[in-house]
Amino acid sequence: MLVVALLATPQARARWLYVPTARFENALLVLDENLVVQSANRAFYRTFGVTPEASIGRTVYDLGNGQWDIPALRRLL
Image 1 (cartoon, rainbow, N blue to C red):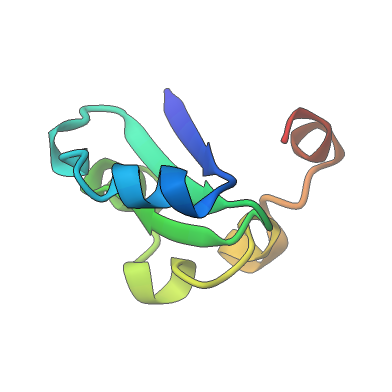
Image 2: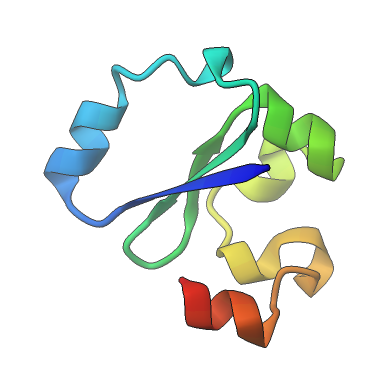
């Protein structure tokens, strides 16, 4: 299971800083209002075989060399 947190406001991003993401057992991906990866937890990196360096600061659609650029995902997000 993948949990995506979309943080569209600076206030939401500020509150998110206090959430202990390492405790989430499921893969967790945190995006800003432009769908740029702000953070993810270890379960996400392990499940999808990516690193923070290859993920943070990139749009969700750029992850995995474009593997996430899926029309159905675009509609959902």
